[in-house]
Image (cartoon, rainbow, N blue to C red; front, top):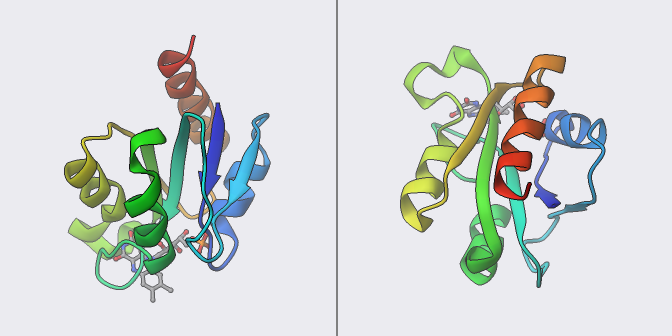
Length: 119
Ligand SMILES: Cc1cc2nc3c(=O)[nH]c(=O)nc-3n(C[C@H](O)[C@H](O)[C@H](O)COP(=O)(O)O)c2cc1C
């Protein structure tokens, strides 16, 4: 399945680019998809969803089948909160929360989640 992602400082990009998947980088939020996809985002100031992801989600939410977020555990309760915010707004399942560019184990768990969505 297509993976769409947003990355400001490169962590999410590194996570996604190590996966054997088709991918689309959300840069402005004006990108459009017309096929099922999953969204991977970073979390920004105090648990926020990045603005370009907000824009993308508003227009493409119906194609999105799940969300994952990167964050940093130093942010405590706001850790990777962008995933929770989007999940509760659009009814998407949270596939994964991971730190920075993730670990090998995170990538395995993410691929397993993709597999469950489209076996
Ligand atoms: C200004 C700023 C605010 C951040 N706020 C949060 C936050 O609220 N929660 C969190 O888990 N991580 C937060 N982070 C950490 C980033 O989400 C994390 O470093 C992520 O891996 C960045 O992904 P990217 O390199 O793909 O942009 C913040 C980072 C910055 C620079």
